Every structure is written in C-alpha cells, then in structure tokens.
Length: 77
Image 1 (cartoon, rainbow, N blue to C red):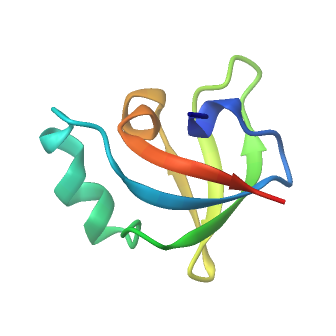
Image 2: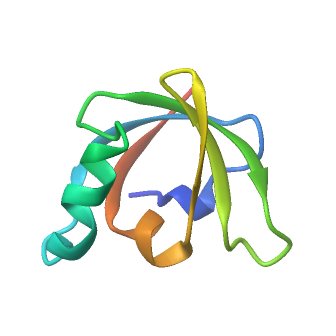
C-alpha cells in the first residue's frame, strides 16, 4: 500500500483511514480535514520527502513524514 511520501507532485489520492497505533496523530489529522474518503493532491515535496504539502478541501496542508505515514491512502489516476 503506498504512503503519502511515495506519491509525486501532482498525484492524487484518497484517505482510506489510519494506521494502527497512530492515535497520536489521528485526531489531529481528522481535525485538519483528513477524514476517510477525502481526496487530496500532492502540491509540493521537500528534497528528502519531508515535509509534504497537499491540497485538501480547498486549502494547503503541510505534513511531516511521521504524520503522513500514519495515513492509509490509495493513489488515484
């Protein structure tokens, strides 16, 4: 299953849920609009992949690698 860090700039994805044990970030990410079923587009990647910026629900959101890895996503074409 791909992670958010595996996607390239311009790639689209959908949030499927959260990894088990990611309770630290789950509430935070859900409060920022990353609920299951939400679609997003990768808009920027730092040279080493940390952080990653996505556009979700009409705003830009920047996530650290630890936060991004707690998301279960699917890549969309």
